[in-house]
Amino acid sequence: MIRDLTTPDADSASGVTPTADRQRFGYAALALLLVGIVLGAAIGLVIPQFRTPGDDSVEAGFFRDMSTHHAQAVEMSMIAHAGSATPSIVTLSADIATTQQAQIGYMQAWLRDWDLSPTSDNTAMAWMPDSAGSVVNGLMPGMANPEQLASLRKATGKDLDIQFLELMRAHHLGGIHMAQEAEELSDNKDVDWLANSMVAAQQGEIQLIDDLLKQARSS
Image (cartoon, rainbow, N blue to C red; front, side):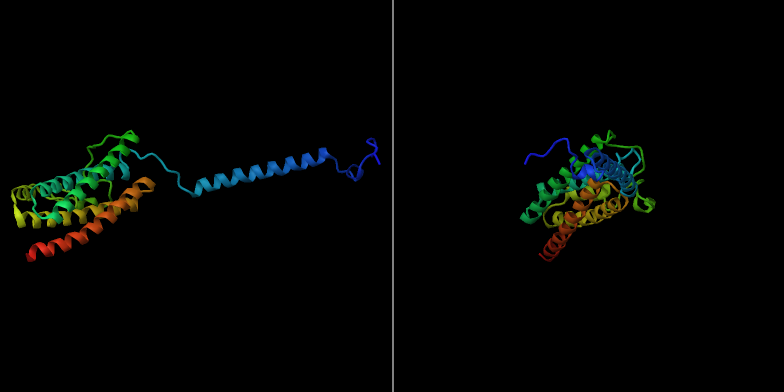
């Protein structure tokens, strides 16, 4: 049987029309949209937004200072790599030099990406609270002084190995302290990632350094 198109169907008879359905759907969609806007605004207030670090920020200060800190580690490692006759020292020094030089590259690239200078007139460690006690004779934590570097350059044989390991152990401990402070103070995920990577790598190397020091001192 062909339905009479002029006869209202059950929905029309009950007062429910397609137009009314669309109106109700539109109101529901609008309500959901408004709820989404409110929730989005609330989430924005709760979750910190990643900002571009400024010139005096923790992130910029850490990257600048750690670049300088790393540069000395690379220098000491190259001295040991060129002068040591101990295969394990040659391997360790090469690993430290390549790893820390690569990390310098990361830090300098991020500074450029933030439109910041790789250097600053700020005092070393100024980005870290209570930093006055961390800088001794102008040197950041764990850094070798000029006399120690001069002695390392002149050393040979077993003496070179021991001096390098002792200086690098202290250097790593200072670097770990700086990286942990940066990770604690920064809310930048890239900085946190790199700082955490530094801590993990240098803690592992300290264990190896301790083993090599025992071997060198007992030989």
